[in-house]
Image 1: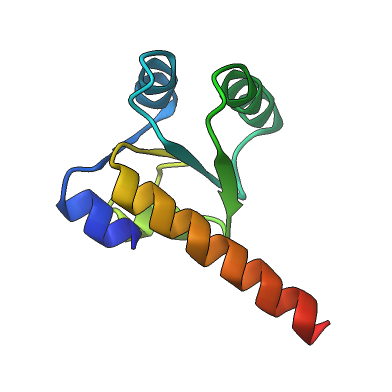
Image 2: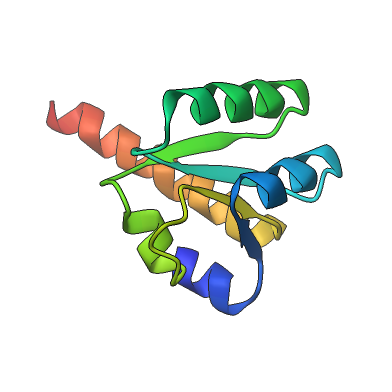
Amino acid sequence: MLGFAARARACVSGYTAVEMGIRKKNILLVILDEAISGNSLERITALCKTFATPWIVAGPPGEAGMRIGKPAAKMIGITREMFARRMLQLTQQSAERTEVED
């Protein structure tokens, strides 16, 4: 799904771009890599809470960036509602399946 969002130019990456997008209310979902630093994680989740923007911590490390063609990207902001909504649905379904399997 991230690859499709990247091809549709429906995402931004990097702390500055994501931060500006959240503040302007252009970012509908933030995807954080498992390998993100603690300080960056703390700062961006606080900003997401302030602006009521959902976020997901995705892994394994580096995979989210690879899917958009930017392996070093640790933070991705989704700008289109259809992609954000579907990614949240997939995340919830995956969590439900994991709970059932445990």
